[in-house]
Image 1 (cartoon, one colour):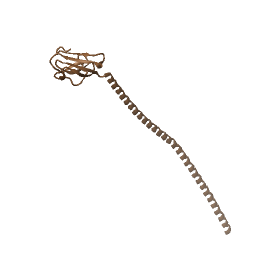
Image 2 (cartoon, rainbow, N blue to C red; image 1 turned 120 degrees about the vertical axis):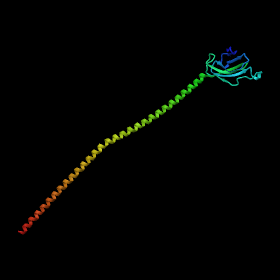
Image 3 (tube, rainbow, N blue to C red; image 1 turned 135 degrees about the vertical axis):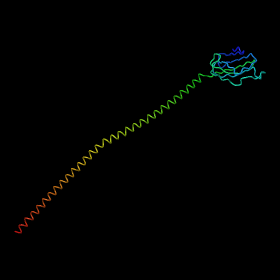
Image 4 (cartoon, helix red, strand yellow; image 1 turned 30 degrees about the vertical axis):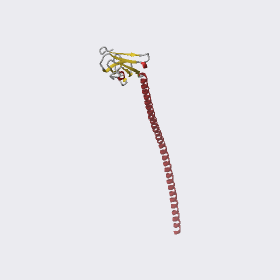
Length: 206
């Protein structure tokens, strides 16, 4: 009720929100534009009857467009709409609620799906990074094993080389000793032959 402007509004319903009607009555010869009125719920409000329409002999002060409620408290209601009230006229609006719960549920579902997709993508990326790190770790481990194996092999090769060098030196020493002995024997034989020749020669002279 707006007693100052002589406007009365009320709802007609049969228990089903889809069949609810909002009726606004103006008992003065004044047109009220941008008239705010509280509505029962969030939704769309379409004017289906206006006594000031030209077809009824009025001036055509009507609300041609569907009114979308706003979450702005008015008349002790959470939502409200702004309409044009015709002079000495009655306007009837059909109320169509927006399934806010369903909308929120859909939004929530989409959000969850988005988060799930994002989480899966993140998990996939983490798995790929982990696999890559494992491959790098395995490669490093393999390289380390090869290095250790090569390090273990080097002393053995060095030992074998030293043993081979020792054997060669020993053989060289043996060869040198053998040559020395042979030279000594040959020298002795040569010296003995000279002595024999000299003795025989002396005997001939005398």
